[in-house]
Image 1 (tube, rainbow, N blue to C red):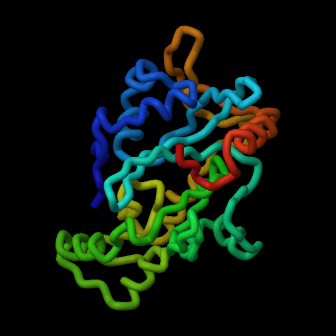
Image 2 (cartoon, rainbow, N blue to C red):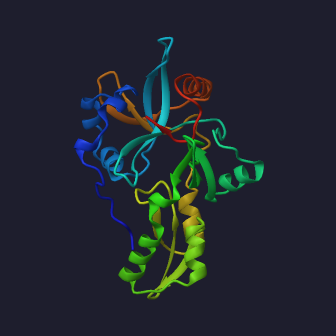
Length: 258
């Protein structure tokens, strides 16, 4: 049932110009550790990466964030960035109840107006960065993904189960003699995930968090020798700088398109 990681994007799809704005040249991108580069090209949300962004005033900031390549229905490839924040910052109107539901791991289905157009979107919180991941509901093609899952596993979902998935709620199924849980997960390239195990296992995987006892977060950092190393990338003092940088560079959106 596990979906093996495979490259959804080609090396030629990599938006090197946009990565350069984060202080990551083509050479540095291609020298990423294999697991990091494969995650990036698969369309999954990457682990934390320490980036360097220059503000309009010329100040260089170290900004820890996660990256994700996504593709819209028209085939356009976008680079999304999810910077570390102290708390949820959003350019969309979320009430306290919606924020609490996001913190508890729920996925919201909400109509959002962007660029003058109203679209139904799924919204999910990335626990580690506190950034919001957003995808247009139509881009996920959930009816097609559900039909494919039914065909592969020779099962038939009920109408209520299908509607629950379309609303962003995970469900538990019995496939053969195994329990599996399926649902929307915007960290996955297809926005849909199948987990071996019951809902408790689904929740456990969704809520895997960083070590709160650690002063900072672990992630990938470029050393002075231009080598990528897995080490601590954030300390508490950098949160203010990160937030300031996001505000200067572009409006504080959820996942930022570059």
